Length: 264
Ligand code: NAD
Image 1 (tube, rainbow, N blue to C red):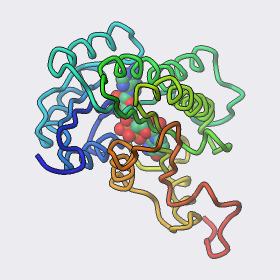
Image 2 (image 1 turned 90 degrees about the vertical axis):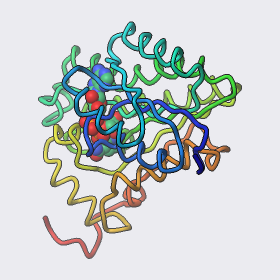
Image 3 (image 1 turned 45 degrees about the vertical axis):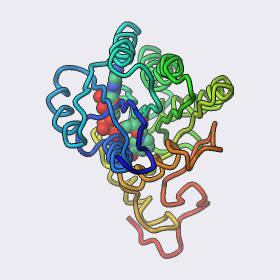
Image 4 (image 1 turned 45 degrees about the horizontal axis):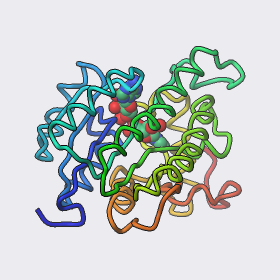
């Protein structure tokens, strides 16, 4: 195989269907020669993920529920047996109770707060530790975040608090793992219509607002995120770690509604 990712082996976590951000990233790195393994959550997703993996020439499709330590251990044990070493990991996982992704953040329950932090934040640290143990020559770890970590966005609520913690953990992991030549970064993606996103209140309005008010006057695509992920996962991003890289058509630099944006 030829390309920027030739000879590189990577684990992609968080593929649910062909709308998933994980799918955009998997396609971009596979097109550059990466060999991929996929993890999926729960038997129901297995039959969706397997044919997608096959399209990219991968038959290594393994279960992993990141809320369960033994499930993460089992995943890395299988990967160790199949591959021995690993070059990169894509963590495209987040979860919160849909009922609390609308209305007031102030109503967040303790149970949902802890579950959201567990699945959306701690899981990246849990995965990073095990992945690093399989990266004797270094590697690259990537997670997905959103602008709701930095500014208040409608309905994002506890997920915004979780993403802020995720971005902080990217910085701490970058320091811990940098000595082993392992880079750790996040992509802060603009809104994309996926299964997870459809749980967020008024998501269509949020997408429209971003389209009308971002400097590029459009929403980003899975391909946009995939291409930027390729940079961070390949040698092109060799000097970059601890970074939250915005792939959001520039929305994060904007201070107010665009003068030419119509009312919606
Ligand atoms: P998606 O629904 O396609 O992917 C979310 C994935 O998380 C699913 O594959 C699901 O199975 C997995 N997941 C949830 N709980 C899990 C668990 N306990 N164990 C293992 N896997 C679990 O949606 P997506 O939008 O592609 O989400 C991927 C990442 O991108 C998430 O972190 C999300 O917050 C982030 N993100 C999304 C957007 C957007 O607008 N879609 C914007 C910025 C960031």
